[in-house]
Image (cartoon, rainbow over all chains, first blue to last red; front, side, top):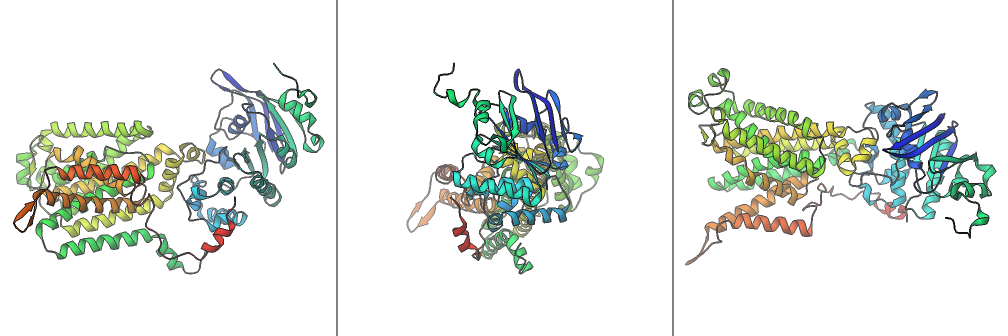
Length: 245
Length: 354
């Protein structure tokens, strides 16, 4: 569904991504894991066309999408849940959801998508008049996901859904994400710092470090974690005690 | 969405508008019943200021950018309206530079006020196209620069504005009830705009510009729309003001007016219509009382009076206290509550996570 080939992104003189390749099939959950500064968020921003790649190509459902405007990418059915949630804290829950459809004018469909989001997250319906800043962290994450769903996407990228949340709440967030795949047939690309968490949720795992994909694999084959550890840190678990210079 | 009683829902949706109109109506009715000419004039002035503050709220409240420039639009509206309503005989004397059509004709004050508002809106639209690309403090300073340019321009443009002297002979048509109806129209305009998809998009950009852009909001465009609508109401308030005073000087529209109206909005709560209304009512009352006290009360034999300029000092103190103890204003940026408890209140508590 989404093919990323030899993607390169630079911030000025700094090269953030040097030749990233992803191949995500329809209906799967793909996870990108990697340490800070590996280029995970950059990859997602390039996919939603907020950043312009310097080289390489991104195609979605057979169509090349790099170079199109972010709004148009959204219209093709790619939706992004940004890192740190970025909800509008003093707007009500309902208003937060409506901003997600600012670019659309089909009232009927908007209403239908709204009802569907509320059905997925009943808590948002109960609190629709409350200001979003009063929601708990987990609820805010649900709201951010709900807002992304309002554009009725086929493909969703989620940047660090576990950021700043208690482990129990993170479990719940992942349950919701897996549910979205089951019930809506959504294809998901999740960026995650914790490889353990990613191995549990993902079908396909990508380990990104220093702007390149170090490892691509079927999550089922990587469950022991050793290969992932090596790709993630650049050395294997057996050497853990040694000082790396 | 809970479709039990559609009418009840609609009432709830526009509740702040209803309650604010009632409060305002009560204030006007009570003060008018005193039948005191001086008080009634203060009331009219207060109501015109309320139109300005509501206009200001349309931009400041929704965009989160402070504008120091709106009194410039009030001035543009005031002069544009006066040009249309003055007696053609006096126009020859005071404003000989006007185009022939205006010199020979005059419009009804209501038509003239609306056109005056539109002219202010056009000025805001054109300047906004450049100005609204700025964000944060840069935008505020930009609007201040814009204001100073308009002010200087009108001060020097003597064949149109009578320059440093005043423009007299404007028919006095603004009564308290006229001003009241303009307040109601401005409130409806502000309320409908802020809940429209344009207002919503702008409020989202106020909260988080980056996230709003990512959601497809054209932030500059939304700001220009809001700036224009807001200048329309402020411009009409200018028209009303000219037809309240009966004369216009450029100096009327300078820093005191700018800061009084901004203080009213800040004191009430910048981000809500209720804040604009409450702030204006409260501060107007305080200013009037202090002005009264400056003139002195008679208490039997002795007369007590506050020193001159107490009103300004009092205003400053209130502003400071509000900024320290309640920075989001009297209303804490919220609209007036729906007074009837929702039935889901109990279940909400049990669902609360973490």
